[in-house]
Image (cartoon, rainbow, N blue to C red):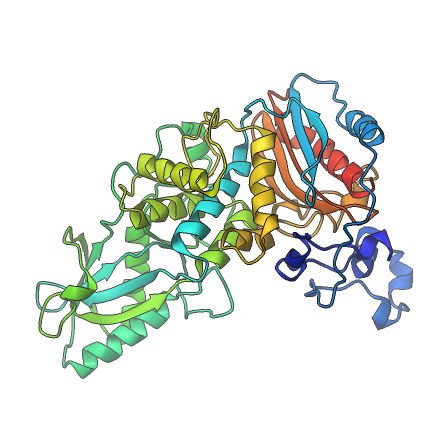
Length: 476
């Protein structure tokens, strides 16, 4: 079997092959090669590069008899790839997934700033606590006053303004659908308009912004104030990156819902207020405030978690962290969410000694964790494909192809890892990180974490170093 067709996951680990979908590398190689424009028109259709990723089926399991990389040769190659002329440090840890054998360690037990690699902990905690199949409900219920509608937030930060999109994580629950269903119920109950709209978003408490986030990052749009419902992960439009963001996501949702109610034939007063009364299913009885008018369901927690990892979405990570806290009966605040994630991850068997966490998305520079700890967590995910936490693995970006790795692994030093490496990225001003796994030339599944801190060339200037090092693992 050629190396470019060996894109699979693990083995005890062997069973994980069925759990994590990956591309067929042989088909994808042309996507990385330059084309002669004059020749494109005469290339047979069957030889053209694919326009989408295929799901793999029928992959043979990895062999436990496949040879391990030679540690001395691997060490020499990795040290060469990690050579960096600027200031800063690279802390690295690599193991064989099947045996757990250490293959390379460089400052591997020192806690470093992980940037968005911290989202791996948040993903594990969300999947374990909330369950991968759980969905969050956004509800429209009757208010205490006649012709009042209460919009009740349920933790869906990926609402869409249009019709619900069943095949999409973003916009899976649509406000246009909620408005039409609400209008039908109101009509059946003989309620006309105009209606007054109120918001109940009281499941989250405390400050909407974590004081550990730099003002400059907030202003640049790296994060927005956290609320238990939001459109497009608290962006004005899907695909927006950076720039201004809604400062009150609950109000943004309510305003969009009001517009859709108008389109559905339900006029509104134009006034939006906040209602501090908590509504529960027990109060939703006919003739009483809190009667359910309509609801829409989010994408599953697994789908949201995978989106969060693939796109490295800070907002979704923070909302999921607070939902973990709420599920555990802890305050659904920034601090409560951090404590909740730590508790769950510790319960999974990952020691949090010497691990410092001050948020759940990795935007804060106060977070500290070692590469060895991240490899241990990834190994837990790979060890049991049937486990809840393993559902995070399909969210790891594919080198050169998907998510936050789409535009990477394209130069001569890293091309060997393109299509093969799956890893979570991380970037801050002086930090770059990459943690994931790859099947090497001989069919061994290798798990790795690389954290670069204090880098004088910044994240953008040093990402190629980590890409080249991960590619060494691919061809080892």
